[in-house]
Image (tube, rainbow, N blue to C red; front, side, top):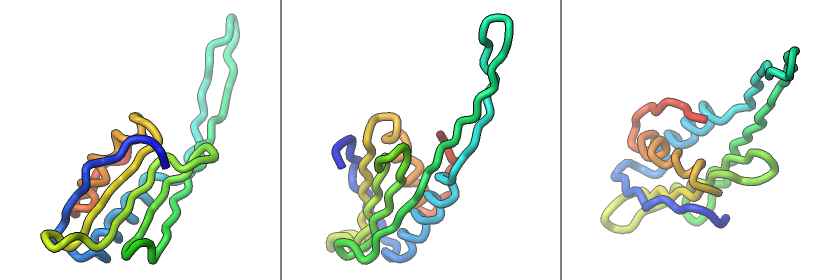
Length: 122
């Protein structure tokens, strides 16, 4: 995927633990969402329903680890790779976003990989 890449994150936690944390965060925050809006239109109002059908995928085994993808609007918008790290760290986490708006999620992914429970943002 083209787009914006995160700086690699090095974790001393086991790969399975970090992958489970990332999976939990993505599954909790990227679920189908339906929003109802009322829009002013002259002397009246129009009611609209907007549905965001996020889907989270996981590929395992992938390059000695797991690859998670957030799929929305007919394309992948966010990809997170969790795999065995180099000698200095047990696990490496790298993310790629389709644009700057999705790249703002990198901090939350890092927090989740480190064991925190970040808030979901849209």
